[in-house]
Length: 291
Image: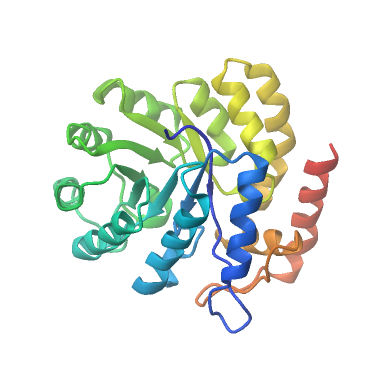
């Protein structure tokens, strides 16, 4: 079910910072047309940290309703409070999401035992497929392979989004997890290699801007056509880099706004893309499309 290019969808906002439901509808339609293989609603790129509980669940519900089963919808429901993560996951299940994506608890820096017990508690509380999400560069805690191995024995914990960009880490995870456990790249720049070595897909920031190209690259590498996939990946690499000129999702929201789908509003403490980065990102977008 979870394979290929899974877009980490931005959450459109109006100038007054209210959510822009019309723009969200247009974006979801575009991704369905362009061949994205799944949509991740309200993850990091969807500004989960600045949406309140009601907004968070409503975005998930609207995406699920619009997609209407055509592709999977994965709901970002992680939190640094276990009980908040449970509540968000319950909301995602009620909205009929296909799975939840749970980032490791950020800021409070739990031990490996704390991480295990956190994810175990959420999995036992909410009967929905769950994907772990490890991104230590943002959370200040690393979900280590031995802990993932323990969690992989819980029936509804079905995979992990691994965003370290390390192929050594992928090999370590493969050594301790069941053969059917899902390994999903969370790093656009290394996703091709991750999939070549056994990953089933990527949760992509870049797919917000060039969904068809990202989906094609994933399709090619997963079907064994690695050199053809590399040709696309080379085209995408400058865009991968430019989309992190400032903290995600600042650049990607500006980029999607340039495509005409929405405004570039973003909630504090994030701010719109700095002027001095805009020409570089714009050029990367143009080069990717024209090359």
